[in-house]
Length: 396
Ligand code: UD1
Ligand code: CA
Image 1 (cartoon, rainbow, N blue to C red):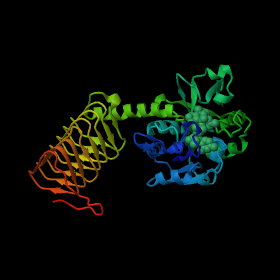
Image 2: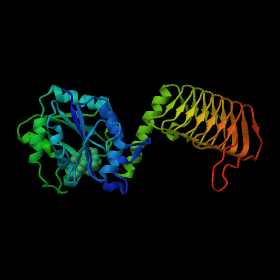
Image 3: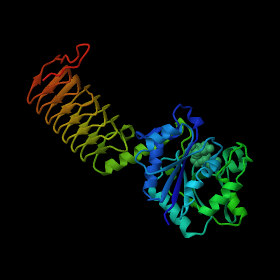
């Protein structure tokens, strides 16, 4: 049976010290909750329920395009209480119920599948995904006894000995639906934070003499939870490495991959060379055999093949035809179209303009709201006067 998935995203994210709800903080240019929903989509669930609370409308606004049911947790009384809000939404769940947190964005569908498979093979009431980490600080610790996992202890409730345990709770679980529903009623707030802890369901299962399963995540990096900006930057670095590795294996050369950032939704063609500090954002598409030099940022643009972008250019929502050359220090603003073989040089700004095939503007120009034909040479210092203080005018 296909799993039903609950994603917890109601928390305030206090430790982020932010006006933005935690689920909306971005990784590789996408809100972290969407990374989680992408992984969930990969396991083809029966239904996805997202628990919202803090700034619910703002979070809901990014969920367009995802087939999810949302429920509201009015007051954030803990992860156990959050799951309780989804009780009605999972009433018709035929298969197991998987619970994930919106602040664990590096998960892959393979890992979720591993958890679901292990859970389905045993008759466990709950299977928890754990990870072995070097620095377990802040996570719930997995306490094992003879019969397997006996309970999970939160950082704030842990004894000195328990704090040394390096096996942590990733916050990812697979539950038998009926057990989950019964456990929710049995979780109390008798702990250091006075919250309903979902991990207490593990000790409850043991008390009912039910089986508790545990899967150690083969790749602990995937289970990094984001509570602070420090965690966010660590996760960003992991994701950047993962994405860059992917493109290098597809035939892209990177001189200094630690400094190159490519958005999740962008694509780069083979034999393209990226120098240090290149940023490729949004839905950008870059062709083959291009050279993109240091410090250049490209957002939501389409670049043809055999294009050279020299150092320190900013290119936004533009289209660059093949064999063109841009920069250094050029700024292509939205709706710029360079036809094949165009040459744009240093300190040139272009906006809402089409530059024809083989045309050049090599030095110190502003070209706004213009249509430039084929093989035109625009000399140094030329500008188009497109604004008279009231209206915009086109130059042809
Ligand atoms: C939680 C686990 C901890 C685990 C860690 C993994 C509990 C009590 N602790 O701790 O064992 O090691 O995740 O990353 O579950 N949320 C709600 N409503 C609430 C509270 C939280 O929706 O009332 C959501 C948050 O938005 C977040 C997720 O649940 O997405 C986890 O909450 P968080 O406060 O970050 O828990 P941790 O302290 O990280
Ligand atoms: Ca967390």
